[in-house]
Length: 402
Image 1 (cartoon, rainbow, N blue to C red):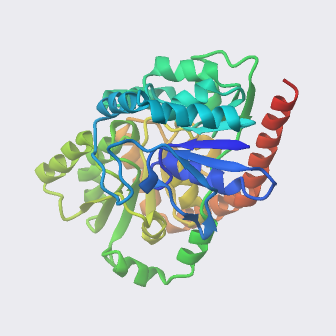
Image 2: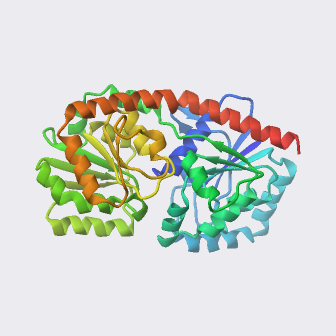
Image 3: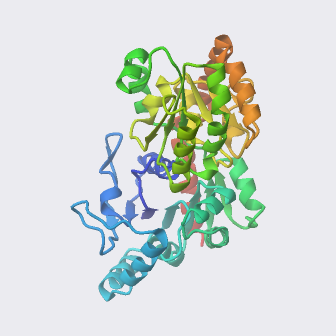
């Protein structure tokens, strides 16, 4: 029996999407998989048409099956959860489940946060695999934005886990400088893409796709995908906008992702620049592949990155990539061969790279050809499934020998 612990599989964050992909890759072997989720309404019944394994629900009193729930600040939610766990019935339910059918392996998608029921299950289990998507710097940004997660707590959970999976070698190395990883099984499994969705979008006429998304036919469209937050560096692109618009007066920039409080200030900055006609904050969408495919370029100015999913998606969707040389991004694209890399927090370098790419369509075509080939050679769903199966089998072997 494998417990797969999640907070959400429907969110557009990289961790949620990667978790759903990992759950889908677990299909096949005769493993009894039980999804344990805090929030009943955020677990999909199907992932790309495939049924999600049976779920054991641990639902907060403030969350209801009809879809209504109280949205609480993470720290308040943690306190609320602690109160719920004091309820004897819920505690007995958790104790009984762990005692009567103890899992052979508990997999936690992302860092468990203090005070959450999933964290309680993870810490009390005997064979624990932690799936790590976030860099130490990203954890710092999350905490500054109100998350109860801290670098110290994340480090504690790395020590608690018996096995660790990182989505890039760079992410593994970054955490190994914070916490010694000796004595643990350590795996590197890069992210993958929803190839069924890729095929659907690639079959569409690009001009019609643009019109359906409200994008101009005659404009040069740039998309920037990711939560609008400090770690993703959208402010660097905003800072460069006046020069980019001077280079290409028909420039149209779409920011795709949930806009945080920090991000709302960026939209005000765009207004002060007088560029509201060139910039759209589209918010969180369930069709990011369509926007990436319809764009002339993906700009990913992140300050920190485990293994950028948007970059992988642009690779397979044949959209030229201009990104920062941080975290796991260099493991996805090779500078000057399958994409273009610039230093983080360097608006001038971003402008110069954009100038080069925007005015050299043969170069952009060479980059997308190499990027697409690199995706299928290194990051395909078939390879992802093989890596996941090998990792889980190794972790189950660890349980059998202890």
